[in-house]
Structures are given as structure tokens and as C-alpha cells.
Length: 56
Image 1 (cartoon, rainbow, N blue to C red):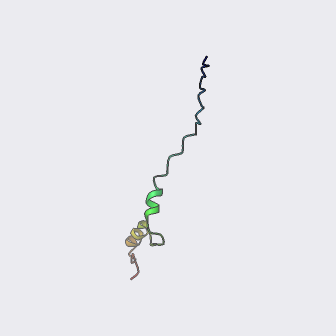
Image 2: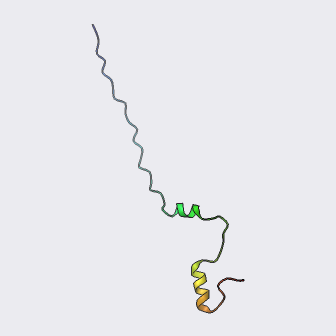
Image 3: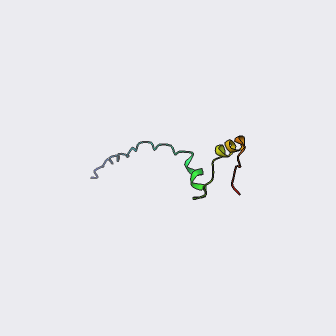
């Protein structure tokens, strides 16, 4: 006489949805570290005021 065993379903773990990644992080990581220069805004401002944009 066989006894039928019912398999109990295991509970699946429900994790909270991960927050979306910041789209600005990947381009920032691809930039060369340590390459510092004036921002484009500062260069434009310098051109408008008649000063040299970059020292030679």
C-alpha cells in the first residue's frame, strides 16, 4: 500500500525592486581621471569678456 505524499510548495522569496541606475554614472566613470580643465561655461565666459580662454 503506497502512501501518496503531497509536495508542499516552497515559498519564493520576494525581493523589493532595485532602484534604477543613475544614467550619469557610466559616462562619468569612462572619463579619464585627473584630467582637469576649465568647464565649457568658464571658457565661453572668458571669450566673452575678452580674456584668453586657455593659457599657452
